[in-house]
Length: 340
Image (cartoon, rainbow, N blue to C red; front, top):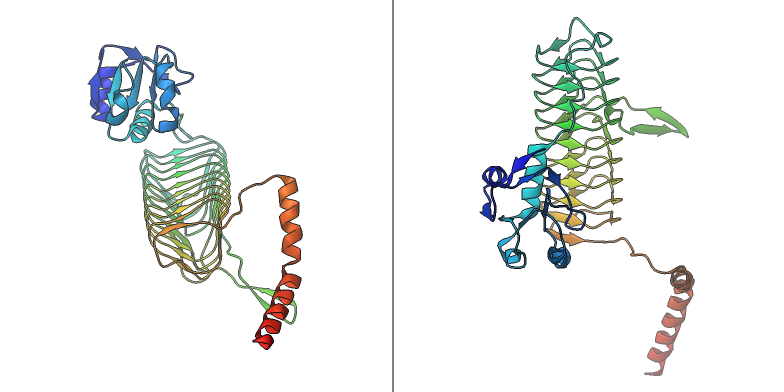
């Protein structure tokens, strides 16, 4: 990367204060930046580092601009500016380029001439691969699956039959989309498998992290709407619906037939039970356990923050005595009542 501050300001629509001819070679944190780096301030707790940073320029808000005398790009939202600049200079390679001779592509598949298929990828009959799509090495695209234009799959992604991915999606390595949901009936102690007849339908501009699993629906489809982002190692069960703009952090689990509203934020390690509905604009902090529906927007928590081991053991000891304490309190209340 070699780009002038004037070019960056134009790309970001930011106000440039300082030397627009200065060329920077990369983005770095305030603490580690050198004179050929551009940095950013998005969290006020790092404001003190403005006095010591060696960055050649800093992206910051108008409120923070007065605290820095060097070259600066004044932005409405410095964190968004950082994200857009990172996209602008992104050098991440393609997951595939051209069609590799070891790719196994059914003659009944429809593959765009501009699509890219990596080594040892398998494209089954009836699959549709859109324009400029990238299918990484060792990916599997099942029968009648559809990969939209400009969608990028990293290595070892598995897309089961009939699954539909929209345009401009990004799926990280080893993710599985469209495996069977966990559907069984119990007949006198024997588990009877319920074939999962639905599929998974994913909208546009959806990003899915590595080793995440999204199960196909039992009868209807599992649906992920556009502009949803899902982190690594999440489990999305059958017939879940996740609405537009929602973000789900790593290792979260959503049980079957649950609907998550628009613009929700699900913290890492959260667990959401099945057959409930969560309304729009709900924030679940990390390790939340949701066992019933949520009908009011807001911030919800249930995970316990860490304490010292000594404190935790004392708390558990008290917890084990709660039943006995409750009996004693009821006995005292009864005695007091009889004395009235």
